[in-house]
Length: 207
Image (tube, rainbow, N blue to C red; front, top):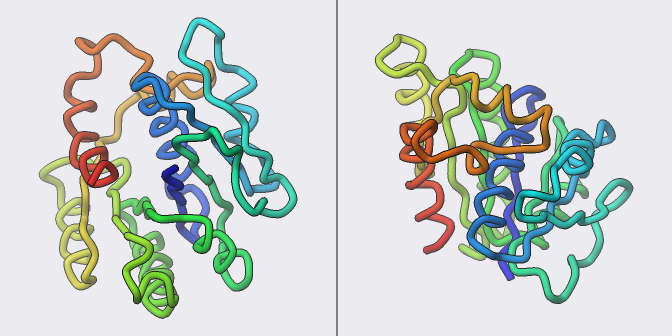
């Protein structure tokens, strides 16, 4: 089983977007996937309730109060969506359950400043230092060839972490979420450009 933690201390960084779309990808690949939501708002849990039975199913991993010791035994892919301000004991527990961490970062000064402190905390975690947990960064809502995108790239270059990909700012993410969908539920011809941006992330998780 593979457990993927989606984390960033700042709200609105794109954690739920990353978690839900990743879950749809694994579901279409035929994996038994569960999605856990540790945020009090339970955004991804509500997204799951909206998902049509016509699409590959995604199971619920009940993380509403405290993180469980582990998801169901027959689960192949487990994804944990987390709230803003994840730190201390809750971060420690989440890391013990995870083997991959995806950190979404948007190209704004506030997001980058908040992420800088988070990267420092991650570097101090024992499981990260020993290589038991892999950490990757994903740029979110990035407009290519802009000053903001270059600032994000320059900012992330100072950390010894792989910048896996930058996902563009597109309406497809906003249009699918209210229907319990992800871009992997859409026809390939409509989202070919976006699927291409996802490939480095998926390859990293497979490795």
